[in-house]
Length: 184
Ligand SMILES: [Ca+2]
Ligand SMILES: [Ca+2]
Image (cartoon, rainbow, N blue to C red; front, top):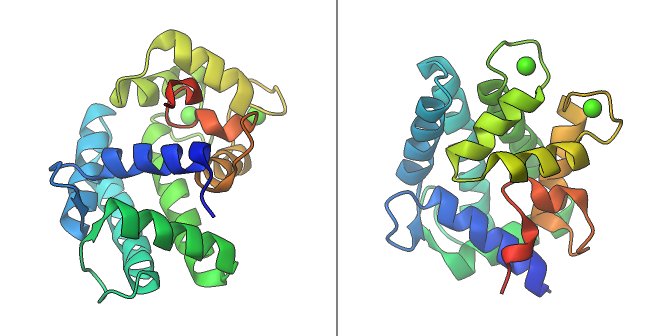
């Protein structure tokens, strides 16, 4: 069952991924999303390709969970229900595909390639989707759970997991893609 907060966060993700804004998500949207975010972060095309590939692999599993042919486009409702179902299933394949997506995204944001995100790198990521520097600083402090001044892969994966699946209003991962308090 979707809670209001989780539903709202998944809608925010869908809107981000649905680059052409036609209300349907397909593999082309995800490849374009990867190229756009790589462009905004001044990342190379190899990183964009890796993220695009990871996202489309993941989308195939989501489409299958929605009972669609692999690669088929999904509207917001079907996409959210399928993402929820995959999360609840606890299966290894979607978990692995999702982790590949998150690590590919981290690699793009990690512009100095030291394997972790500095506050400056994270701030640029926030700017890429219209977040402010102030919001980025708040989010960074929350997502850097061990307070060592960087967001590492484990912290980023945990943030992503909470962002997609947690209905706890205090979950730190709610901040991954912007402040969670804009919800209706
Ligand atoms: Ca870095
Ligand atoms: Ca940390």
